[in-house]
Amino acid sequence: MRFGHKAVPMALAAVLIDTIGFGIVAPVFPALLTSLGHADIEHATRIAGWMLVVYAAAQFVAGPVLGNLSDRFGRRPVLIASMLSFGIDYAVMAVAPSVAWLFVGRAVAGIAGAVYGPAGSVIADVTPPERRGATFALIGAAFGLGFIIGPALGGLFSLWGPRAPFHAAAALALVNAAVMLVAMPETLAVENRRPFRLRDAHVVGAFRPLFHAGHAAPLLLAMFLWQLAHMVYPATWSFWATARFGWDAKAIGWSLAFVGLVSTIVQGGLTGRAITRFGERRALLIGLVAGGGSFLAFAAVSASWQVYLLFCTSALSGFAMPAMQGLMSRMVDATRQGQLQGGLGSMGSVSAIIAPLLLTQVLAWGIDHGFPGAAFVIAGVLGLAAAGIVVARVRVAAAS
Image 1: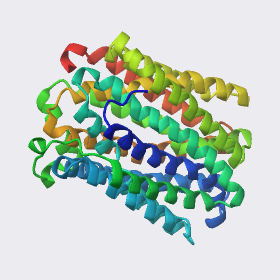
Image 2: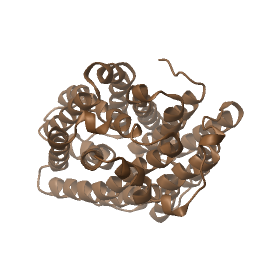
Image 3: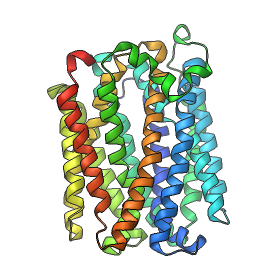
Image 4: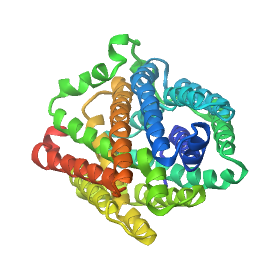
């Protein structure tokens, strides 16, 4: 895999550590919440949904702020500060005495973990516009690799108790911050920096340049629907797998690690080639259809081997986000890449506020009524609706 600039692997490492931190604790959350909250699996599912809402709300506020700060001060200091905060927060969560402490920890992690904007801006800074869609796939590859390492480590560390994965996540983040402090170069040229303004540091302000460019609204709507759909994994997977197949933390960890493996293969080896060969719009459609169709199929699975087969088809959904980011990054100039990428992250946080509330409640209802796959039906419909919008309203000529 060729990075093209020394700063790119450093930015990807921040995304990787953020994903590992999220994934490493996922296998133990059902056990930890049922223990601390004195709850059964249905009630713990609802608690986890609200916890994800808090995390996403914090990212919603922080995403445009960090993106605009990176346009003012550069990418490097923002990424380093995020990793330091992330590490300290997970160290505190490791000793949380109650569910309330976990909620506070998730809020801080949401702020510190809003690194996708600055990381995406690093790629936009050093990559020619015509290659950005393919290069943004590296972020997806880092995300996928994090879901190999994180859940696998989470399942392993769970042998030492449900709190051990938090200690591991804290150590990884602090080590990454130290490496970035020593080795990461800055990518934003001084002449491309601009003043920080509060009027730009929110989701509407972040997208103002896109709307000025025109023709962005259908693509933004499709992205939002897809982000809602894709949240079915972090919002419900551990609880769905527990309810549907009776999997323990180790089995959940290995399943998520397999998701990460196939995602990394697709993002690192196929997405860039697909965007180059088919163009961003067609690659986007392939991703949305593969993802939406796989979600519907998950609702009907009856055996564990079917789950792993569907992981392979749903991995093609990894074409979607890099193609969308590539289209949008060419709509704004070099001084506002951080603002744009922060806004995209913030919009993802809006979906991450709405989706857990919707999907965890649907999952809990489905468990209660003997149909745990209900949440995947909702996700499938949303993903295919996003594909329909792209077919009907998104044109390459208008977006490039």
